[in-house]
Image 1 (cartoon, rainbow, N blue to C red):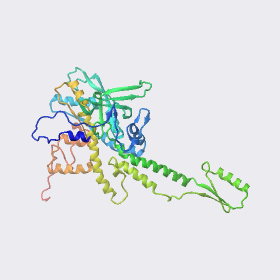
Image 2: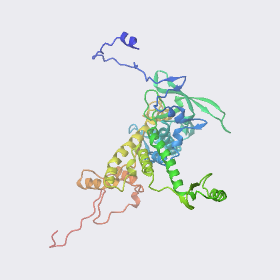
Image 3: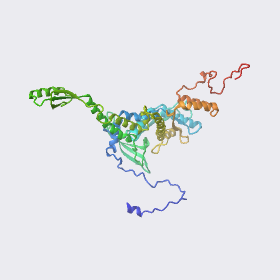
Amino acid sequence: MAAAASSSSLSPAAVDDFRVRPRAVGGPSTPIWNGYLGDLDPNRELRGDKWHGTPWELGIAEKMMRDPHVRQSVSIVANPVLAGVYDFAAASRDPLDVEAAEFCRWAFIERSRWKAALRYVITGYMRDGVALLEMTDDTAQVSASRFPLHPGRGLGVVPTGWHDRPAHTITRWQQRKGSPEQLGAVVQTVPGSDEERPGDRIIGSDRLIRWTWEQEGAHFTGFPLLRSAYQPWKLKIAFLIIDAIKHERHGVGTPLLYYPPDAPDEDLEAAEKILAEMRANAKGYMMFGSDYKFEWSTTSSSDGTAIAAAIERCNKDIAHNVAAAFMLLGGGGGSYALAQSQEGQYAIALDAHADFLIEPWNLGADGWSPIERITRMNYGPDVGVPRLYVRNLPTRDWTKVLPALHNLGVSGFITPDEPTESRLREVLRLPERDPSTARRPMQGAAFIGSEQPQQSQPAPGVQL
């Protein structure tokens, strides 16, 4: 290596070279041999399929999901992100672009199990580091009244399913030629069932939508969020076993018998038989030479270390792994203030997960975009591709926003209009505005609208 480095020329790059650079010089430097990913995890017990599992055996990640605190830490991220409103924004105000966005809203969100697919994705990449969906599409009837500009004469191409391809069934990974950071294909090992033929399936990346959390180089399985919660989870399991043994020994006593040194053998045999019948396990009794005395021996609840506190610390570390440790705070001095400060980081983390979730739909991870595919197959190459986005994540405290919005409206910095009212009704989960049943506000109430209520005139001689 030293000889090779010394023989290379290390001349400085020209600063005035403005030519385009279409090809990279370096590479992802990820060891992939015959489709098998090299794993450099410092814990050898967690490398490769030991973490993800195999088609025939659960891995550590799935075992961790059986823990209620680990599972709840995943839900703490997934549920708020899924609670947002997913919609499509048109590329422009051109009528064709607006209709293309409406078509994608119908095709992707309204007519498919959209939230179920998103839940699988979030759970998948948090647990395994990677989530894969195989997208299928087919022709379907299209409403001519709702989509009058659609050129298909009543027929269009729509997604028909988002089929999960679990990470523990992916046995080999292939890089994309010319772009080694992207996926070219995977080999899925199907163990077989009543309806599935066992064997390997080669699935091209042009059929897959991929989410890889913190991908480095071409390591397509990324860095699972649960990986950094493994240490407190493993310690917690050990502490729980010790705590269970402690409770058993405290709650289930051991019979003790003290006997004098000159006790007859027949008395000892009878006493041993009695004690054996009183046992809590195979040999749960003890005999000591002394005067005859019987008692139950138990452990004190204060014996040993603070196991309960250690278990609670592990639970807090698991929550801290997803920036949600503030939910376990409270009761102590200053804990509420600390929780308020940590909650901001949690809200930022949720925004990051939401952005990560929608990016492969819009841009694609491996050279193609599902939204662009459906748009082009229905409206041709000239239409603007709409963009998927999410709004109204439950991370904003509207009890603080609404007073500020009211003050801005009263001071004239914000002009009340229909979009503002519609958005407020949406985030507050109120019904849509119905002009036919709208009422004028009561006299003296705050008024937002185009018409102002009549002001009452004071009586003569009355000063206000």
